[in-house]
Length: 299
Image (tube, rainbow, N blue to C red; front, side):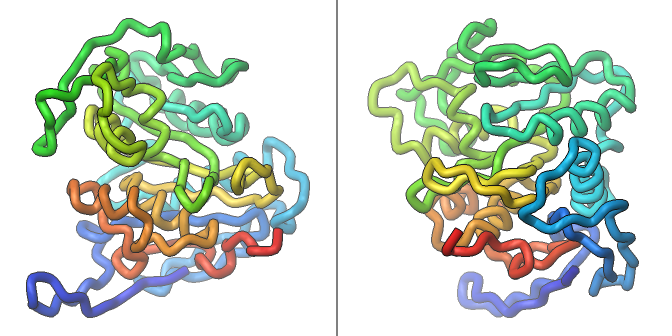
């Protein structure tokens, strides 16, 4: 549980960044061993999980659900988040990575359904559909061809994007804690599944991922579960990370996986495009500390 304060250079000026309910992204980090504590900013006390377990223990779905709910609770700011952003008349889509923990997906779907939205659908390329809601395969979904989005739009580069992603009212991502050759494959990278370039040489994987991300920036992101994936190897590591700013969630998750977020090209590109600063000193981390949650290098 921590608040952070730093001095940063911006255009030659010194900037003081302090936790603010309205300005600083909150990211919840919960290990299966979470025994409660106190937020350094505001003194809010956090209760322990009902059944704390070692980080390498085998967990039941109920224990994963408890972790996920607590991470979402701590990763929601005063302006909203899950579940408060979900309304009865909304079409909600959850973009789910094929390696996502089914118990995390189920918990997110339950939280959303408790708000009784107009619809809830899961978009995923997983070989086995998730049972939490109707699943839509992005490869066969009705799609549109769109130019690369936003102020970085390159009119000579186009993507095929499912209409369900473009037109939904709320988009939430659920992914694994996963790194391959030093590149985080978590929330942002999942968008390479739903934004398929139709133009040759659309760019690097990082550029394609951020282009896809820009078609509909998610309102919430959840990563983690019972396993972490390092260079294709699955490792038991029980942690869930959640927040309203996916780039901040990915930055914290990258640090948990042993990377330095402010040197990761994907996260630096996200910062340049205005999606969030990967510097951990600008993120209000709540729950477990990054050092507590970090995957051991020898695992």
